[in-house]
Image (tube, rainbow, N blue to C red; front, side, top):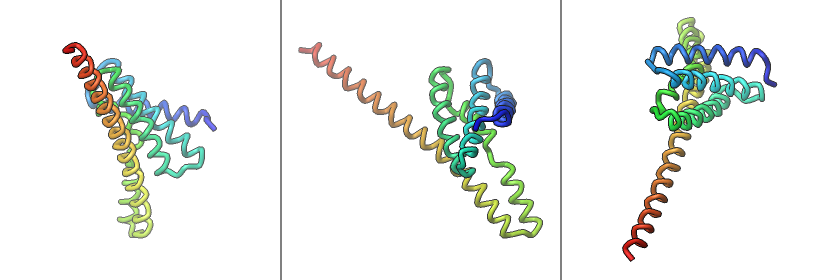
Length: 162
C-alpha cells in the first residue's frame, strides 16, 4: 500500500511546508517540526486515499492526525499551536480545486463548476472540522486536568488546616 510515490510526494510536501514556515518566520527546530507536520499530513491523506477513502474523508482524517501532532509538538516546543497547524495544513489546501472550479465557470461548464466547487468546499470544510474537533477535545482535556489538580490542592490545604 505504501509506495515510493507516496514517500516522494510526502517529502516534497515537507519542503513546501518548510518554505511556508520560512515565509511565516518560524525559527530553529520549530521550523523543522512544522515542516514535518506538512509531510505527515500529506502522507496520511495519500494513505487514506490508497485505502479507498474519498478526498473529503482522507482530508478529514489527515487534519485530525496533523492537529494531534501539532497539539503535542506545541507543548513540547512551547510554541503556539497555530504556527504548527498552519504549516501542516498548507499541503492539503484545495487550491487546485478552487482554480478548476473558476476555470470551468469561465468556460461555461456551469454544472462541472458546481460539482468541483462543492467538492472543494467539502474538502476545505473537512479540514476545518478536523482541526476544530481536535482543538475542542484538547481544551476539554486540559480543562478537566486543571479542575482535577485544583481539587487535589484543595484537599491538601484542608488537611493542613486540620
